[in-house]
Length: 417
Image (spheres, one colour):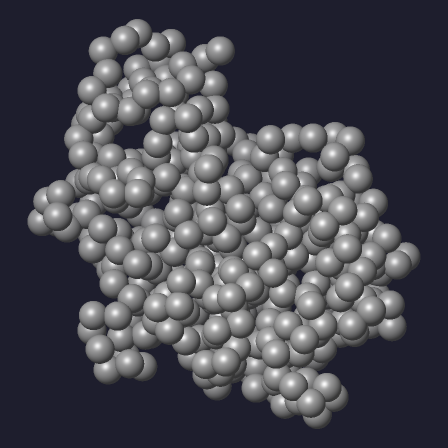
């Protein structure tokens, strides 16, 4: 088993105490074997010259195969945005999905994302690209009512077949998940079938929820209840639910999230660009012990796949909306992009922090980058969240293997930088 010793690093551990210390990282195979001051021999020794090691970023809501759709629906009202996107998206081939997913993964890796949760169809093609790119994926095949699908076959059966295929051909980078497009295209019967599938395969459901005001008003008109209230009434919500967006929530719905231990993927860039009209009540969620993570959504509604950008926006947006500069601190945003992302994906015992025994998913940042000037231990988190861009990222390691080195993709032949 190959070992690599990364020497002389500022290590931002994200452990329970949020320790930051100077030391070394010993990676054996795909595991953090030892962390601290290390003198033992390794197959490879890399002097990191005082640079900064942080856990890999975890993007908990993405549609990675839409990378070729960047810029096709900018500056449009939401109904026109949906019309444009759905039309473009309706006749894609599996080969096209695989190719464009790889491009999206290149962008994520260059931005330090080592794990992402995807919600789409043709997830088998997306998994192929993830293995090639050396990036960790939680792949959710989207389920919706038969009348709305443009794909061949039954969506529930397609999702089941995908999960079965992953189970038969396991890869440590791949976790199969059940997806639900949203309550606006999934009736109660479809939702229960999705939940049964998730229970059968011991996984969770990744879905869009309460993203727009129209979604809420349509649900009230149809069922007499708001989306979260209705889903709770039919017994759908539990700790195995990852709800993307969650913008239009009442205090009562927040309490339901807390009681049912629903996880949230906050997507500030997407929500702002699409002008969904509300701001997700993130400080209130945190106060009610709801696990909040960060997602980029697709490049159609964001135009970039950067967790550095999402961290900064998530902090500034809520400071502005609450008239309170103390809410959603830099550390809170950093937590959402790392350890909270791991909790949202039910992987916090494996990823999300730099700790012995966990998977070796981490980023090395260039201490000499202008974002870190003036450098001090006390300012590292602030510099990452409020100052850094991807030019600060020197190396990205996923599962013990290098995917990005000196700012270039090395895990596959990519034209992108």
